[in-house]
Image (cartoon, rainbow, N blue to C red):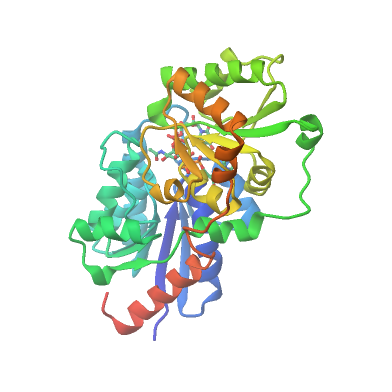
Length: 372
Ligand code: UD1
Ligand code: UDP
């Protein structure tokens, strides 16, 4: 059998973290000739992940610009990836999740009639603007894909409801858990633990497009008041490199607040600091998947989630983005021990860390049997 020519493409930090274990797994298999393409929709935040997993891209489209629009990203990825596919003619293109790189890359593959495998398929809110534009990106890629790698039965059911062919859907867990196997270290130490002392750590991240502006300002002000009234808590906030976010955070917090605004952390640091945290405050998607496995409560700074598994496991609580909602949720979790205990139980809705191996096996079998 000829080698299967597989392309993996990704562009942002979360895609890279969850595709890295798949890259490493596919590289080990003699049945596969793998090409890694990066759009570099993110630059520094993507390179951090590539360095940690020691992955070198075969193609780097280097598209990121400050203040890029969704249309900028789409046009550049479509154009550059289209050309690469035309030149190299892969058998299959693997995309991940819901970013604009994901959508534009899948569209380029479709235009060239190349098969598409969608990793982390079938997550839905069915609310077009939440998360924005990710919900529609994911739905559109779902319509283009030939193989759907759904993390859970819930996501599989969403795809079945949309009349996707049951034979094209595989429940494989989430490769976020594969990544945690590489990163979490029981002997981990970071200098930030000195600053923390005996206080309790809240880890904060916030970056969603729909939260920019007033919602993020509400969140920051609620945290500031909570910290003023609860001196036994400290917040670590690795600030996303979007300049709008940095500006807003600097305008609200100052050195008197018990908060450290730091640069984005490398993923090994981030996962281990997550493990040390008392709880997490975040609008991130990926963190909602990692937290149940680490047993860390997350107050989710959103009105909707496409990740209901963490809610069912009691790890996640949707708290929205109003000042009152966030302030109350912080106080409740900080002072209600029963609630905290209920939310801090570890569970594994996203599998046992074998997602990359399962996906690789499925691709090899699919091409071997030529029933794709
Ligand atoms: C993107 C994804 C979002 C994902 C998030 C992960 C889309 C539409 N959005 O959103 O789904 O949750 O990544 O973090 O695909 N920047 C840098 N350096 C970096 C990264 C970003 O300077 O390494 C700055 C740039 O000014 C860039 C801006 O951040 O223009 C926004 O980046 P962009 O990828 O457009 O949006 P995100 O909010 O990061
Ligand atoms: N993460 C990281 N460093 C940070 C913040 C987050 O490595 O400073 C990791 C986190 O563990 C998760 C991923 O980045 O794996 C989530 O990325 P992000 O929140 O930017 O995107 P989303 O998941 O919302 O698309």
